[in-house]
Length: 133
Image (tube, rainbow, N blue to C red; front, side):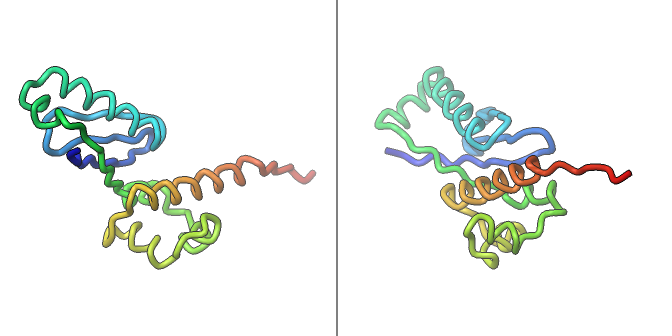
């Protein structure tokens, strides 16, 4: 089974993923999980249509997602990294390295970070602010 490296980036409105070694193999999605699913589907189509890829991956493949958490946190400058680390039971120093781009997070670590962000979103959505009159 061969590994296929895919890069996942975040923009203001969606996630985008691409396989650098396969020109045009890219997908988008509203969430980290949806972009992973969409890229898997696209890659399957590329392999079906291209004889060279079909031969290369005939024994199967595993997509290794590399996430650019730096791009995620550029969109969230208001987030306190230390508090987010506590919320997600993450190492704050390691999270800072992901945010700065000096270290890349594994897929498992990325899922933990995204879960922490989802928890923060839930907390924010649970708050109701009443006007004082």
